Length: 296
Image: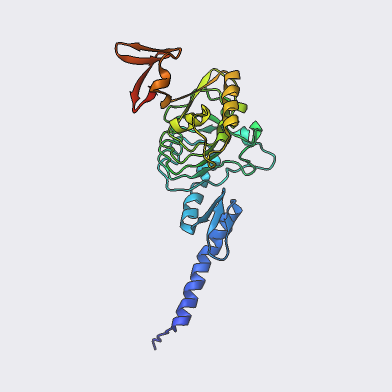
């Protein structure tokens, strides 16, 4: 005789809960073992300073774990919908600098927010053994509009940084470039912090290169404008940073900026008019609303 078993609403809810636990508990164990922190109250996760990561977002991060462990990452995470990455597999006693990163367009066009490779990485560590070694930076973070933090990367063996490496990184605030020795363009990032630039200059491997800044950042550097608290640095600290850069033969420039009002630029050394065009140290310039703009 065929029997039909029915469940009450409470019984159905109980079964659904048990089925959910049967799936979620093993996943939670995997995620936490890989480095994430679970919130038992709401089933959300925290990782690399990002809170309220949903189980679905965490699963997307976890499925890219193998690629991060291998560290051979050209195009590996390009266009991915992930908020951050799990720390790469780092056996006990093995230094982070033992396996370099090929970063050609690794995260390009992705929704990455924080890039942190090592378990023990600290944001302001200047120890090269705890900075992610890199062999190539070409379009690595291009189009990453949500990216705001990059933990130390060791650029000792990078002789060229692609002009599009940080292109479109409008939210970038904290970026730590250790052993920087090549020109880098941060002109798409108006929120780059004073601490990021101080770190780059202080820990540079050699001089003779340029750092191209967003016009707003350049104005802070030239003490034309006081930096907001979110960017940091007092006027005297920004002035000292410029001086330190000069000592190390590191030049700061920008893509477009105002330098002097129309009343001020007349008679200034290095300013001339050639064929009805203003020239300032051989760079083109125009005047708009009594403000002199230079174009690089």
